[in-house]
Structures are given as structure tokens and as C-alpha cells.
Length: 337
Image (cartoon, rainbow, N blue to C red):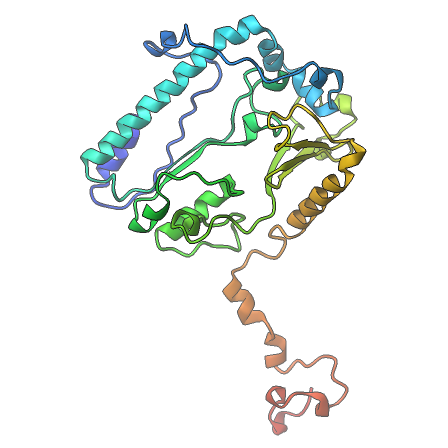
């Protein structure tokens, strides 16, 4: 894939390009070629982030995911210890391939004029929370790496800095469009451009929460929860401290990441946090109710439509012509409608 990416860039000569290079690794089946297979055999492996309480008071949806083969596999510490060095080798292999690509950009003189974003579509539990794979919204799966290099001089103000703004993958496309001098199609896009953050003009986004969505309708356990295919959705709302897992028809889950950064203490039914849960649910409702429910047309189109009926002489609700503003009256020979 790296070689094909290099070939594609070379074939473009001096033309601008947008390249989406999506490595599948690190990923199942946790196999990696030499020399990466043996690089980390003696590495210290972190202990799993999990407690017995998570099993004793398991949420029905989380319990369903715990029953999956991947989760059962990583609940076995021997198997987990076997996989971890390979997983690290997979990461190292991707690191090296990205390095090869960046070196080629530098060789071609493109390193100082190419915006580069490194991110992922999800994380991997590897046994944390008694889970495997990528499901649900714990940080291991939902908090993604996002490193972005903006070559413009305007980004020098923030170069090398970290940012804890509430951002999401939906912000990437409008950021790319604006950085290239375009105007993002906001009537289609959910995200926000991060260009002003990259250029030091602001420190965060306008949103109060960042949202993730998932659906367990494809999972074999869903019939046991008295769910149907059309109500297996779940949504996460995170405001920078509290994270809510909203499960329609089932209890919510709530975690305070300031006091419980490893998300081990579920406050979903704790009466002392009812107000926090309701606030996040209300914010989720506002988010869903305003999520591009209007016909997807541009703001310019809507501006042209505003007051069009009035300008065309369609005057509804006026009892007599005396009530019509002068600027809205039709010429006398056309009469009053």
C-alpha cells in the first residue's frame, strides 16, 4: 500500500493531490512478518484495565459484548500475553511504512507543502474492560489518535502543541477543504473546521458535546436483550468530563473521567448523578433534533428563499392593504392580493 501510494504521487507530477491511505493494521488476525514478529517478545505488557465489579454489575449490552469470542479470548491472560507483542510489532510496521512515505515526500520537496493527518477509525481493547475488538464507547475504542501537520506559516503559532478540544472524525473533511482555500459544504457536513485552532485563533470548537454512534444489531447476542434490529442503536455524549452511553430501552451508563479516568465506576443508575445524566440526554436530543433535518441545501439557497413569497406578492395574514408595508405593496394596476 505504501508503494502504491508513492507510485500515485509520482504519477501526478506537479499536480495537487488528496490521498487517503488506510492501513488496516494493527488489526486481526494479529499476524506480523519478520522482523516485527520478534521485536517485542520481551517487552513489558501493561496489565489489563478491568475489575471484577464490571462483571458483577455488568450492563446488559456490555455483557453481550463480553460473551463474544474475542472478549473471551482476551479474558485469558496467557492468550493476551501472546497477542500483545505481535500487536506492538504491527504498530511498528505501520510506523516504518509511514516513515518511508514521509521520506519520499521530503525527497520530492513536498514535505513543506503537504498537510498530513494521522488518525484511526477505532481503537482496540485487547482485554481492557473484559472486551476484545472495538465495540462500545470506552476510551480504548472511542478516543482516537489525531495528529495533524499543517505546513502553512500560520500554523507555526501552535506547532508541536497538544489540544484537548472536543473534536471528532467529522471535523477532518471541513478542515481539509478550508485549509486548501475552499468553502466547506456546511449543509452536508456535520463537523467543524479546525483551521482556526491550528492557526492559534481559538482554543476549542463550538460544540458542548462530542458524539459517537454504534449499533449492535449485527451481534448475535441482541435477541437476548429483547431488542429488535431497528432499536439496537446506542449513542455516546462526552462533554470533556462526563461520558454518557445512551441505550434506548435499557439503562444508561455514565462515567466521570475526571475522577475515574479508566471508566471503571458506572454511575448510570446512581441517584446522585441523575441531573448529569439528564443534562447529557438533553444535549443529545438537541444534537439529534438539529442534525441536518432541513433539506440539504446551502445557506445561500435558503437566503434567497427567505421572504420570497412576500416579494412575489403572496401576502398572507393581512386584513387590508393598509397593513401591508409600503415596500411590499404591488403596483396599483396589479391590485392587492
